[in-house]
Amino acid sequence: MASRPDWHFRSFGPLSPEARTAIEDTKKYPMDELVPLEATQKPFDERFRNVAITNDAGATEHFLVQSQLIPKAGWEVLLLTPGEQAWTRAVGTVALTALLLLVVGLIATVVIQRRVQLQERMRAALSMQEELEHRVTQRTAELKEANSLIMQEVEERRAAETLLRQTQTELIQAGKLAALGQMAAALSHEFNQPLAAVKSFARNAGAYLERGEPEKVRQNVGMIDDMVDRLAAISTHLRNFARRPGEKTEPVLLNRALDSAMVILEPKMRASGCSVSHDIGDADIWVLGGQVRLQQVFVNLLSNAVDAMRDIPEPVVDLTVQHDDERVSVNVRDRGTGMTDAEIAQLFDPFFTTKEPGKGMGLGLSISYNIVRDFGGTLEGRNHPDGGAVFSVTLKLAESQTMAAAE
Ligand code: ADP
Image (tube, rainbow, N blue to C red; front, top):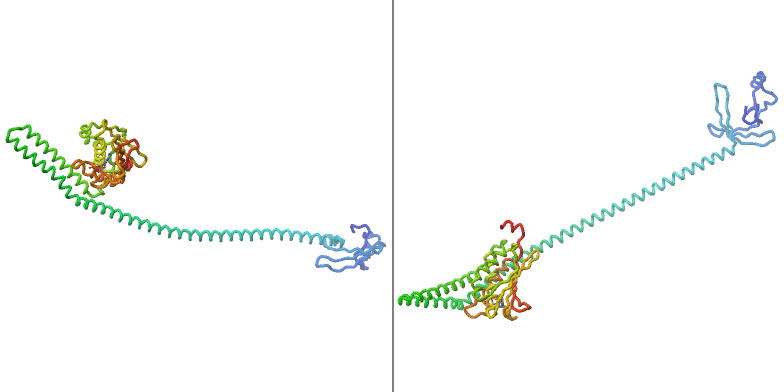
């Protein structure tokens, strides 16, 4: 049997006589057509054979033969693939395989390239990170070094500042004591004058007592009382002047210090017909200082203002307060004659006074200056553009917690 009609009843090889007889006996096949095909065979590999079949017209065809035995039926089935077709298929298969391999190769190349690129990028990133870390470490070390240098410098500056402060304090103190020494003669005059007066008033009082004139006695004793007050005042000034700076500062009420200073100066103001106009307000203002010392500063400033307006018809002292978040300034302004530049330059020098002998000692502003400076504040004196002098005390505002604690 064959798929091609021209191969029907043709055997693949010469039939043995027994086979021919067996076929003849079946009487099924036309014996004259049982002519073997003109075929030459050679093995191709274990499974295939190459077969060349020459047809009756003499044309030779090449086939690749694959055979399979079907034992139960006793058949051998041969599959003949025309050589050209097999070749084409093989070539096709090879080409396809090659193509596939190429595609796989390409994909593999791309993947590998990607991985290589990725690895390279990772390596680059890693080295960059290492470089960065290295730089950060280096920079940190540099910063640490710079920082420690700065800290060292700060420490040195702090030590130098402390030393400077100490030296300044010592100098001020030494200067004050030296000034006191120099002033010993003037001071003895300051004391001797009232003492001599006291002595003569006492003598007079004794004489009047003997004469039985009690009114005159009372007058002399009153004058002794005034002189003793003056002596006490001088002695208080001196004590304050000799005092070492650096006494404790604490939150104090600015309003209270101003009020009590005005109360103390009340008699003096009344005597000179002087009034005070102020805009202090009712709100409590807490500053860093000492209550009594602060009050002393305002007494000095107000007293000077009253003195400066002795020849003015309607003397008025303007008291104004200005403050920001950290500091408060109290301005004491008078309508007096003001000060010359030379006076302004010496205002705060100890014993500088333009007042008549016996009226001023030239210590008020110097003491006030030191007090305010001890509080961490400033004291300035200048002429007001509209005439008269204005003195400004600037103090540190106390923090609210400290204020509450102080209350
Ligand atoms: P004193 O009042 O004993 O003279 P101060 O130290 O208080 O000492 O003042 C020193 C000097 O500064 C005064 O003698 C005066 O010349 C000047 N002075 C102070 N306050 C005023 C003022 N308000 N107007 C003009 N001059 C002033």
